[in-house]
Image 1 (tube, helix red, strand yellow):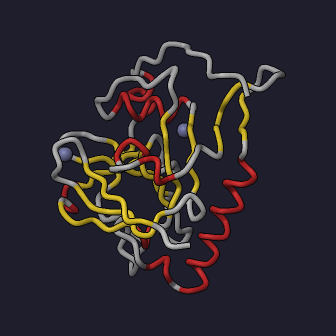
Image 2: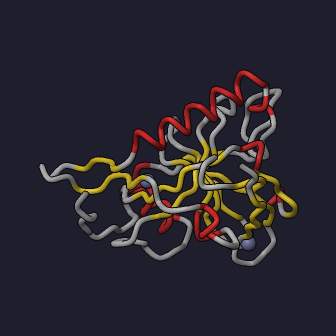
Length: 199
Ligand SMILES: [Zn+2]
Ligand SMILES: [Zn+2]
């Protein structure tokens, strides 16, 4: 199914580009209610999104085109093995999440950064919502995982994983030095206890 190209930009429009060939069938729209996604917003100088989720579209790194401001991509993580959280250095805007290795081809782009979020389709999964037993769990995750895994495996088999704006494919290193937020810094981010919605 032919998709559409959707532009994205940071707040000050220095970092901008496009997601190529997007359709609701080749990515996953996920709402995440986890503490780390909230903390990442606050760390990046944004308001705490709670009780609303952080909206993410899980997509293919080789279909992310950065047209301007590549040198303004900064990246931090809450641990030395954790998810990489990419933001625009210019204005702080959170933009993407990736894993640590380019070989697992995956990118999550912030839903609210794209020009027309309706083109991403409906939310297919809600992560870290409250289950009937009171614990945190996920809705619709099986669909999202299947899509993610088939995208990543195809990228690996075809060598497409090497096409990514986030890593140097030769070294596997991120294009910007990762700032690992210390446990003390992370703990200092004030996050009021807000219950996620019930699944
Ligand atoms: Zn999260
Ligand atoms: Zn900016």
